[in-house]
Length: 156
Image 1 (cartoon, rainbow, N blue to C red):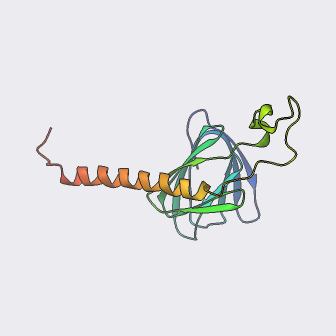
Image 2: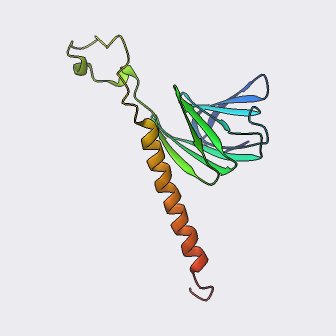
Image 3: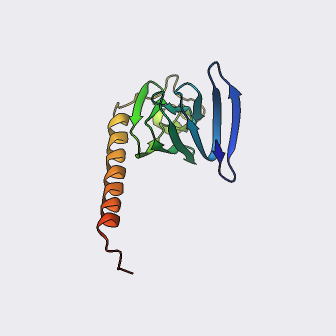
């Protein structure tokens, strides 16, 4: 595991490996077993998708945003009841849903201090948004790779 400057992480022992709670900053981890390392960041859980050599980078961008990159091997990102697979070489921007406390008090029409008893209903479109962001990232990477491959070595 590599920690970037100003990274805040707590390591815990797990039954088959380690669990890292990433509170801020960025970390890179490498693992050959899916169960050997799991990262928990802002309620999301990230781990290797299979028992293959995996290198991943996870960054906490903000209170509701993560950036997850699968440098080698695929990753599984689980948030609440939804799991997405990040293929090798892809980078995802993961946007997390707001908690009920983040909803303005006027939204429930009952005035200050009266928060809804249940969290707001989810639209179910989180997976589609994540897929669109991943497709955009993959297209950007493909364009950059093609540009580098076709560029003449004699160009400045």
